[in-house]
Length: 281
Image (cartoon, rainbow, N blue to C red):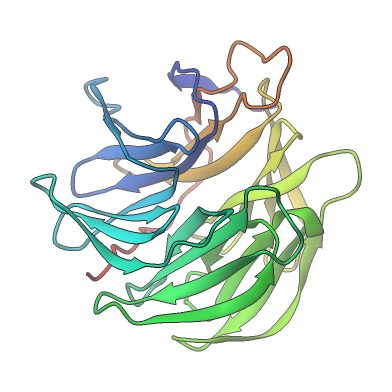
């Protein structure tokens, strides 16, 4: 077991989407159901919180400052001065946003899911800064972790109920040749958010597993970080050298949540992350 620390003591219902913003030296993370965007500055300990008007699945830095938001009713842009506008507005009754990631070319790959988690009720779509939208994967159930290999030629993806982390060939705009990187065995949780490190290994947070696992590019399990909060949701590398692994957790649905459930945990010196591109829009 690797020692963890508490980065942010919190009681988020559904803590998610940790993202390191190198421009500000802060971690951005969310409470999806609490409709809040949080930031945390590990150098000063300063925290901020901003409330959104609807459930939010992801918030990623934009190249010109501000954030791109994956919201219940579509994708919007939050400017540095706080002004908001929709980039793509597409309300679908019973559906909400979930995890999202920025590809090497600066496009946003945004996932959705049904509130009732109906099979095939969600999608994964690619959005560019000019508002162009293309559904990349239809018939997804719970669209979750998405990440790219260091050279950008592979994309990793988790549709949580499948128990799999899949890998695709990525040609810059599209994906093809889907196959399984790894399948999470019964009884140890479900794959949720993920991140890819500088060695091309995939770190996967396990919902109801209380752990983050690291898999090699060939799909071999080579490290497990055990955590006290059972609903581990997502992870990312942050800090000035991208060596600290930040992990979000949730307390929703737990009758007796652990004191750390809903907090952001950190494992200092866990590895070496990749610089994450900003959204070009």
